Length: 392
Ligand code: SAH
Image (cartoon, rainbow, N blue to C red; front, side):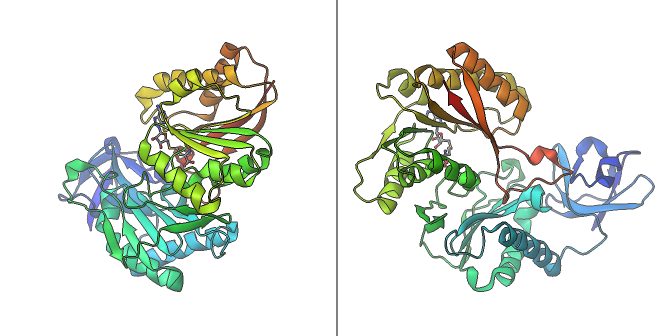
């Protein structure tokens, strides 16, 4: 393992367990590592600080350990066993009622660059760093040891999440098993999970708790689930006793998925309809009056420099929805942009309320669920925020 020396004073954030070394903090490396190699991070005087994966880019090292320890089978087993224990403690793992959860959430589980979502007996593993890509088979092996019978397949899905410049020829595919039994259970509801071609790892696991809250508000309401994707919110609204549920997504594939998932749980239930349409166009032209609306758009700001534009987008979207909602409606509105803070999002929604000239109360402030933990030393890991509003 090569030694990487930091510039003077640049060990400070690492001493507070922040898990990244930025490229500007690096003085020199005593050799030329390949991308994804382990490096030992030292102060400018050669004192040990951390071990991590090296990569070309603004984040030069993602720290795996602040101890001078080998990154071997035992290391991966320990980390994954802790992550699994956390999920059992939360209550999302080890039950038949729920087999859909995030087992590893990158920095939140002290494993920067790694995401593992569980769908029944299938783990979908996603590398966001070259180092995790290099270690994928070791991780899969450790996962088999930790999960035992609860695991049948490991599907690796990193085609779109790794830097293409690293030229890794990564391919999506099974590392363990090959079952295509794609039905997973979330809070007793069934979902087809398209891990082969779907967005992210195939499902937005992070909205589980917020979907339950939608269920609680759905009785006798006319529900609009905008940006529905696989229709998670729609299925919960159906169970909650909604009068009708309309799901909208610009992608026809998403519309097919939501229809499949509704059919799986509520066969031939005529309360549901899905439309392939652009959100703004739908909101402008809709004739139906919806008194429960969910707005869960894709990240409008993927980078810091897109923030201003994104805030405008959130404002416009929310204003359009609020303008048309009848008195006494409920609006669930979300932002999953990491670059937008909770306060910025709230300000965007505040501006929307003003533009729509509506009296609005905040009933709930929502966030990512406990299986997407935030490393306290890495507040950047907080990304999902939502508001539940009462529109007067
Ligand atoms: N609410 C979903 C996740 C939403 S992901 C869930 O709980 O699983 C965002 C979705 O927005 C994607 O499916 C994407 O196809 C859709 N989308 C993106 N731009 C859109 C637009 N302009 N109008 C409607 N849908 C859009």
